[in-house]
Image 1 (cartoon, rainbow, N blue to C red):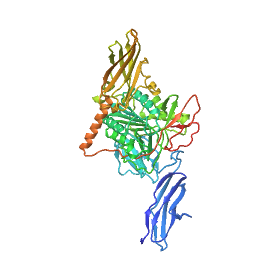
Image 2: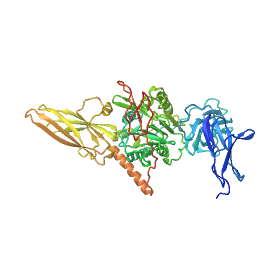
Image 3: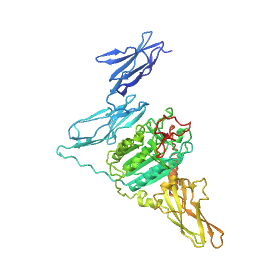
Image 4: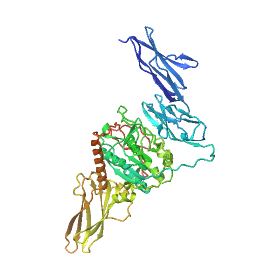
Length: 633
């Protein structure tokens, strides 16, 4: 039996906006019944709060104050809790805090860049909300400043050594966040004119990994990711990127493709990662859902985006851009979080979220085609010669003006980019053959083939790489003898083990083939999931026609070999490298990522009929009725 009072749960400090409903807790154990009394520091004395006699103190925070709780028993034993400070920040913009905020830090005032003369004092600050109150740590040019752990930082009598980029890392038990970079430029007393813009090292290569998951095995299919990945790949190639574009990947295939992407990154490279598909967010962690994820998602079924970005930073790239076109709804709060270390303050990272925290990302459906709201506006600005963060700002503004998603989808940008880098920057070739666009395009191109049948019919096989793991094969008759009529040609793959080929031309295929010269072809075969092939592809060409001389039907068959797709070779090599490395290290790397349920919404825009709701699976989270703009699954 306890002889003394013991406080088991101390109250914690907090930093909240004006009138925020707050609860302070003090829980204790003792030998007899305990009594509680809360006090508030009221200058110059400490005053008892009337009626505050419970372990929990509920109130609306209206001003900054200190609080303490007294615990006593009937034997007149007394014990006080720790003093806690409740900091109240005023003039916080409406909507800065989500309705179901769990206390994770939210920066409400960023540090501001400054241009000052030498020997002057400089003041930097970073204010953040948090429950418990967040901790601060300042960094200068990527180096931690051990004794700079307050929200305000004063640098006395600055010198040139103090110039550079300053970042503030804000954290508490619920998560972490980095401030925007503040640039400090020191002007010597002798030099009165503004310092010239410092030159930056040029990019040595550009590479992008684009993943779009459309067809899910256990969840509602999506419409936009395939089209969005295709359109973005075309634009990035115009900017000089070596592009890996993949659709409908399992978890294992996503991990292998990411490993290969990371192997292509190196010092000086610009790396861009884009994902469109089902996704979710949990306490600042973002997760991608592969097409083979079960219902409901399990921790081992999903992939952490933050972990990818960490590994991108490890490659010493000059620019890392992550674009997430997915929902960020919060679900299953009881799931464990993946273990992710804080990102390094290298000043080279840009995050572009299609939507804000705890919100959906919408698709726009017009007749047979769909595209994401985010991509609709991204493709308008991505080719412009401006700093990547400024380009994304323009996208954010355009989305904000779209009446179809007002109050439903707002883009969010996070970055620590300290240099004026743009996706349009020219490449200084450093001898890295892997990211030489000429070499890259030669590897990905499939040459034409001429097919000659014994009856005199000739045809040409053409190949269009739509995605890195999906090609369209076209057959065009180039010569038909006069004694033959009703000539038809059919393509298929007899060795296709699991039905990766498809000879139907759906509306999406029609859109994706519009980049060709518009010439009519006689047959089209869709070869998808190329990453699954382990050997060369056997292509069967069947000819059917009628002889005008005899009236009899004529049938011939030929086979042609398409070498094993380059994406299969690349991903197999990446996987072999990964296995060999980790076997050598005596460790196996496995993703351990929490599961949450989510679904991307489709914004139906049909010019011929009014908006309508469609039924959803009962196993998916229920959503509120959105009126005339309804999410469609």
